Image (cartoon, rainbow, N blue to C red):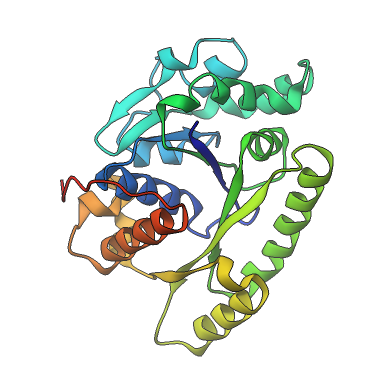
Length: 261
């Protein structure tokens, strides 16, 4: 059964979707079987994986609300499989509220396909709502990207409160997968200070790899490619490849690398 990881942070602009897409691509490149579930109505993970988020094909809304078989909605991409999203998902949260076992809809969907993957990543919306709660209920663990800026620490407190609430009331087995430092700027003391605070609190849960602040990383989504494909030689690409290695090591997962695509 594949491990389900929710990539979450209630504060926007922390590199959540970029990290979700890039890690999926790096793991797929390393030989792991990966699925990315886009639960964000903005659909940025969908376009970041090279898919058209205005497509009229089946998508996450079709699966959650209309009961379409998830296998019919999954798209194959060069960077891993994808359950796409678009703006129609903005109404899904309201419709889920009226459904039976509303907190477990996504969990039940993923249970039907999890045996086909090593890892299933869920790109959560940057807010606390029914879509996020569904994601946390479906997940085994939460991966938390944290921007190396002061206000990111305040947003992190809110997220941890949400995780504790979910763990207590809905998903007792939920754990922290890891905390990823993003937009790390080696030229500033602030990045170093934030990193120190994060490591002090999360200890070994903090990844040793920090994702650098990079124009190339920011450019990649507009081209519909992960940074690993957009600029293979960049510092950002190298950082996400190192993150994938650390992720696999922590999960005791050995894969036969396919090399750089």
